[in-house]
Image 1 (cartoon, rainbow, N blue to C red):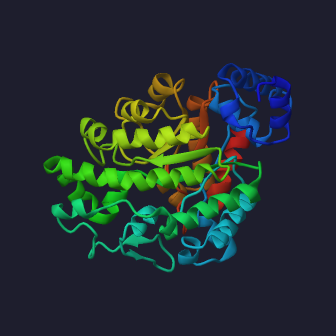
Image 2: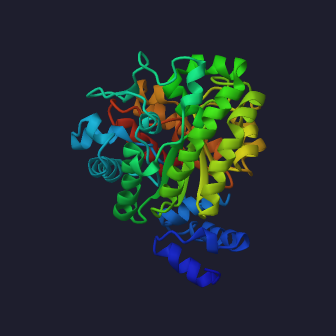
Image 3: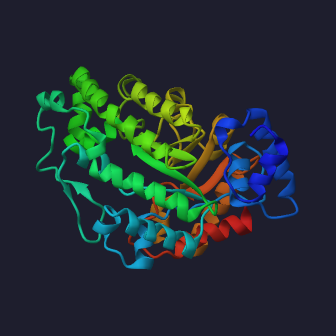
Length: 385
């Protein structure tokens, strides 16, 4: 799609163009046009997100409350059905989007999806997030790392069902919002099968064993990501939680998971999709993750380790990636709508200048709280954005 007028026509219709066919200068030209048009009229969702991704000023700040399982409240669907049934899960996502709104939707069930297909027993509470049975982990001692093998992706039940969800959502949402898939990085998957603290210790004492297990896991994750890319999604998000002070040292993360995260991002880019990162850890390593994955966007809950203030963050990384965040989820759970809107305004004032920012919670909207503060986020984007 090298014809500028054809690209503009596609965006004005609210349709996502095939990014592989669009030269960088043309994307910038279209984003600049949309930025100018946004001064006197409303942009389409796709225009708004694309303009922000290209670091131009949209008509208002793109926003998403990251409503995932919280949409169950609208439909009354039990959590186990939401996390295992693509059709019912799509009903939940659509209900959340239509009820509250959002320019950017991240499709996410929970962090146990991949691990279950590797044989980890998962507990499904009726009204809480599925979690591994840590009394019966796949990796009981360090020798068990060598037993982890790539799985037959065609038989990976939950990952296949999640791909089905992506396909359904692409068809149902159309271009009313920009969608992203999701994959937990290999260290994250491994932590579901070992326990995070024990895995951290093993990364220090037995790094070769951990790396070998990650290599096997990543073979399947690459197939999982490729399948998501083929559904028509415009982006896939990689969760690299342990690239933070909550996980490993920066050097150790770059040595162990960094190369595998790079492989995942390369598959996403090869398919012409945008690469997003989610990391809700404290003092996360923006610099290391950017070196490894070259993301278009980073969703975060706390400031990176080399920034003391939001202003530092914008100055250091604002021209490299689109910043997605970072309203605290405890505030959403305990704060009043006015307190949430005030926090949104403060972040918009610092982070939204010249685009490259999407207003969002630092992590998934708390699933079992009122949706009132999800509306507060969207209202703040309209008033202050």
